[in-house]
Image (cartoon, rainbow, N blue to C red; front, side, top):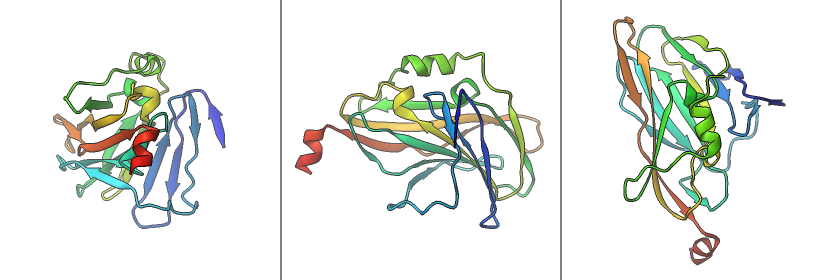
Length: 196
């Protein structure tokens, strides 16, 4: 199923006691429904969990940490309620315009610039309405991004990726910045891949 335009789609998975809600939005302006009934991927995804803070935990998930030049770099940001209380989570698409900060650095710790599409999304005042969801203890929400369309990741090399977002504390008295772990990825040219 494909929906054009910036959209948010929620998928509720009831296959386990822990509910997962998925928001998929690809940077080309299309969104797809992630089916939880599909066959599992051939390789286990690599997860980079951040430190839990005030009931929230953020994890960055990648299918691999090695990519070819010009291949898609699909990532998921998983926000989980690790508290014993129900929490409220609000988000809208495009994510870069709604409090998500994804920092991509090269091996010299220089920030990789946004593409023109990434700049448009970050400055977008045209985001879809915020979707507010109650997140019971142990539940999570998953946000999908295609990083190559948002960041100028065109050259072979080593890069690091980390996502952050500010959330309210469980009592609503303050705001806390929640960060994923730092993913280390490598982009290889076709020549590099043949050598390995």
